[in-house]
Image (cartoon, rainbow, N blue to C red; front, side):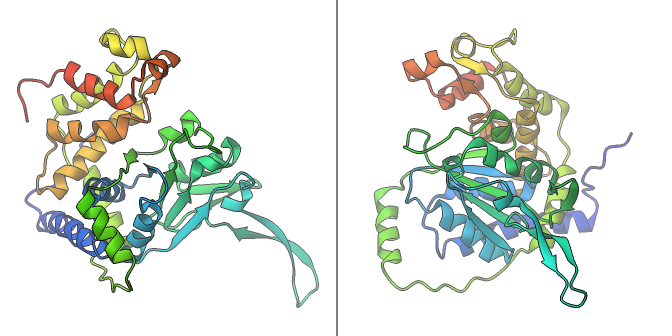
Amino acid sequence: MAVDTVDFESADDIALADKMKVGRQQIIEELGKRIIGQSEVIELVLLTLFVGGNSLIVGVPGLAKTLLVATLARVLDLKFTRIQFTPDLMPSDITGTDIIQEDTATGRRQMVFAPGPIFSNIVLADEINRTPPKTQSALLEAMQEHRVTIQGRTYDLAEPFYVFATQNPIELEGTYPLPEAQLDRFMFHIVIEHPPEDEEFEVVRSTTAIIDPHFNRPVNGDDLIAFQRLVRRVPVAEPVMRYALSLARTSRPKSKNAPDTVKKFVAFGASVRAAQYLVLGGKARALTSGRYHVSYDDIRSMAHPVLRHRVLTNFRAESEGITTDSIVDELLSTVAVPKSGM
């Protein structure tokens, strides 16, 4: 069966790829009206949009996680919903539920579906780990299938659809760890850190003055859907794809090629979704860099955000202070890049 790839001779494909590259830069400029610094975080958020995935943003309170996603929705002119996750939040508070409604004309009562906040384009699951796993799991079908099922009936969500979840470090009081199945639905685990002093000074200066920016909207929802389709059509050489797969497979402690660090400190390695997102992220990165093929560097640059929440460490790692990022570093140094190179 023929593979539908980008036709480099097609003026339409080239124009769309150029629009994606230029649109990325324009979105960054618009976000800069409210967000100071955090260029790596913004880059991963934009790759999430272009792939059509969902991402988890982790950091201590006060680092503009919520502001970033809300501003992004304004720049893109997409419907935005923020759900504040709390210990008493119920699944129906997210998906919606059937309610009894009386027909004023006939006086008859009937069950009517009242959509929940999940019916949006960009959903911010704020502090997702402050609610128990039962409620967290209400997002699973929406994130994977872009639909929800209530009382046996299925409702499609409008496209484009994204979930961005913010999470406080698990060490903070009143947090619940996300189930492995939930974590695996997130394309990236994005870590947001305190900015350098100069950037932090600019944050303080700008946020203590009057802020009322006007946003241009260089990219809309239809553009994002077109970008997602284009990304999936970018060709990937077989050695590059096998390299991505090797990174995922080598993270599993039962793999014959797993390094000693993985065998000692990893309880569960990455799923096949890791390899899929390494490739998809690499495709989007290549296009936004003005290239029409995926390189090994594209795959390697995706390794930490794709793998850090899929490589689950054991108690021994925790007791010895071994982090998932250090294990990903080991994978990158252990899994050889084919010498043919790209």
